[in-house]
Image (cartoon, rainbow, N blue to C red):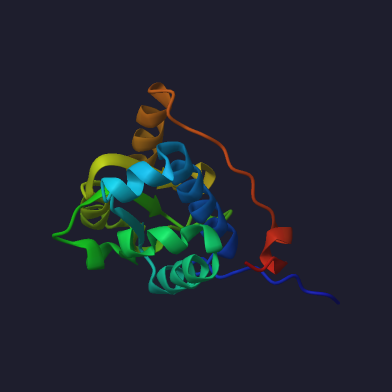
Length: 163
C-alpha cells in the first residue's frame, strides 16, 4: 500500500509557496526601485513556528528576494506583537477537511496579526477550513464584499516540489 505524504498543518509547503508567490507578485507590481527607494518593509506572519522557519528558508533560496531580504521579516504572530510593517502577509496555514484551526481560534492572536500593516494587508488562507468558524466566515464575507478575494490552487502534488 502506498501512502501519500501530506504536510502537517503547521508546516504546509504548498501554502508557503502560495505565500511567497503572492509576495513576489505584489513586490513586482509595486516595482523594485520604489520598494528599495522608499524602504517599504514587509512582514510575513504565520501562527506556526514550523511554517515561519520554512518560509525563511524559501526566501533565502529564492533569488528574486535577494535585493529585498533586509526589508522582509518573517515571524510568528507573537513575534510581531508591538511591531508594524508597511505591507503584511498573513499565512494562516491551516487547510484540512475537518475545519481544525488550532490556536487560530484565539482571536486575540488574529487581532495582533491583522493590526500590523500600515499600508497593505494580505491574508492567505483556506476558506473551506476557516469559514467553519464564525469570525473567519465574517471576515471572508467582508473581504469578498469588497471584491478583494483571489483564488490560488494548490494540490497534494505540490508537496514534492522544491524551491
